[in-house]
Length: 448
Image (tube, rainbow, N blue to C red; front, top):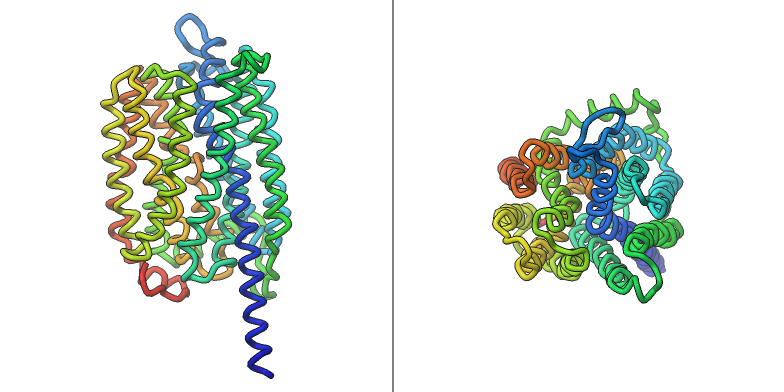
């Protein structure tokens, strides 16, 4: 009878864990539409065109009296958003771990970002400052929300399940991005038949991403549950807690070594994602419909790529698989530099290559880092991890923007990002991940 009771309890725990995992997947389903439709496809070219409309005769806008090339304004706004997020995330992460109440914080960040995104409907004419402000708020809120979302992974998946669970989450996100992009493509290409202008169609696509984000966030908020924090784990709030977190991270130098490598190579990945549409439209002379189809191709192949690289990780280990993906990223960027203008077929080929490596490199990085986080410190450590995730990189867009500002060439700007993948590869290759997992106090999986 006792054995039956234990079995029933274990079965119930497994069922509850699966229920939480399914709810967790749905936050990727909710917010990835923002990353895809807004950050990757529409906002870069559209905000650039709004800034160009407001520019002076020399092509400069003057936010706060500072001369900025209109073509660099979007990249600078992305950079500024992560500076804001860097200030906020560690404090929110410390509060989440201290109180155990992640869900209210996740809800606040998600709905602030969704509201800012929906507000992009009012971005028209020469309102480039409004666009920059909404982008900064949405990106910073997305960064905080993703930090809290990612910090659930060690709590809802045992070590042997994390690569698979993380990969499924990314696959859900890319599937949602693909679905909404198809609708965006229909609206954008047929805007005349719907009785709206091209500009209005773009603004509808931007705002609908915010509505989608807000609506589907309800699913994880219903399924995920907060954990009670042990009494001995409660520490000082605010800046003192942040200082304690920094000191604690110094006690795990191998975890910090992985985090440094991730921050470097993911800066490159996220900058490619956020600036690819600007490169395609401004340098290669491709139309918005071509860009939408290319990003749709990325989304579809990223689903297969995330799941396929998850299987490769089970055979070769997550670290080796990520290293292989960084080599592929370097080759892809080099190919992008030589793409001929006005040749959508080659741009589609490049998009296919990006799709196959994008989801897997991100999903495996997230699951590998989850093994390196000391128990009970999930949100705090993921706040540092999230500083460079989901298009929130600041150094990459800054380098891209400065390179374009100095050279006036988007080709020079895109090839400058190679340094992130080369340096990231070198840093990751030096991290002994099995020892790092043990030093963090976690069980070491058979293959990692």
